[in-house]
Length: 74
Image (cartoon, rainbow, N blue to C red):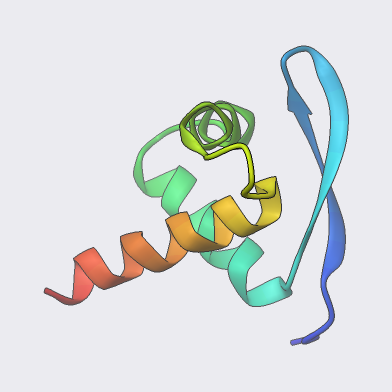
């Protein structure tokens, strides 16, 4: 897998935008969405609504993925 972030297109609040995520994070994020039976854009919107203003969307998604993976380890 590529360690460089790649732009991923999502729709947020009715507008197309992109987030730059590494392949590993994107694969896990998609897996989490499937596990929750939730569209990618819906989970992105949820993460966006919960993130602090100083936290970028890509960082918020990475932190979300990390938290979900850690929950599964416990």
